[in-house]
Length: 127
Image (cartoon, rainbow, N blue to C red; front, side):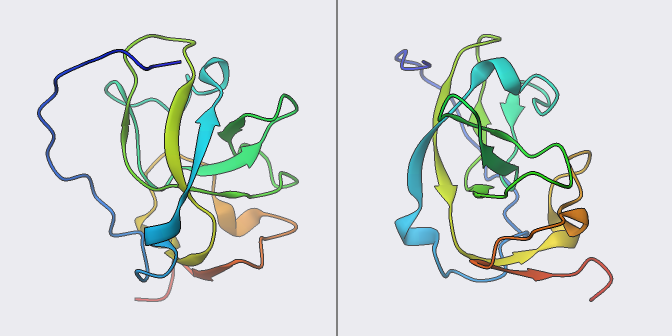
């Protein structure tokens, strides 16, 4: 796990994908499987808004297929210092999501065959 003491300067990450404050203050802490995130890491970070599912080992990983069960969204951008190392992070497990503002290059959640009823997804075409 990434529990090293590190000093970093942080800017504000883009959370425009959040459609409301609902659920933000009680996000759950989860462990993201470091061996499953290589395709989602951009410039050394996991972007906030990344859709997550529970993996077979009980850890969380990015949603990658229409049949996956969406559990939540990564609430805050997470630095990834070493490949393959697990990341402990906050996951939004209910609320309103503005799909058109989710990070580019991630799985399109509008194609999920069984969406999570804990989320209200505002479609991409709505402005």
